[in-house]
Image (cartoon, rainbow, N blue to C red; front, side, top):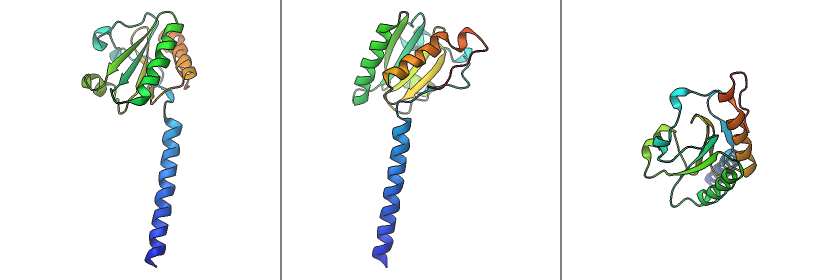
Length: 157
């Protein structure tokens, strides 16, 4: 009877692990709206906060660590997107040396990407490596989104 119990526990553990893995895989890199989609002036980020100049239209802020493999691919994607869209900058932050920002923005893993509008408000964020198309769509929401009109709210990507 103990062998059957052990097999049942093993099967349940494997099933739970697969389920959790599938959920994490689905959420990884997904760009989502921050808050209710409206800009919060108290949460505005400045160039002094980041130690780098903000983009005129939007800023892509990437939190990375030295040992993070997906951070390299994310750096490439964000750099390409910033190069394609005038007035957009990509700023990379070393999460290990900027724990103040890690706490402020509740960064739990790297890479974490924040999309800031032209006023420095965080309008979108992604944990994990985002897809290029999702970053472009998030930029569209930051450039044309809620900070430019109270009736327009950014949609989830």
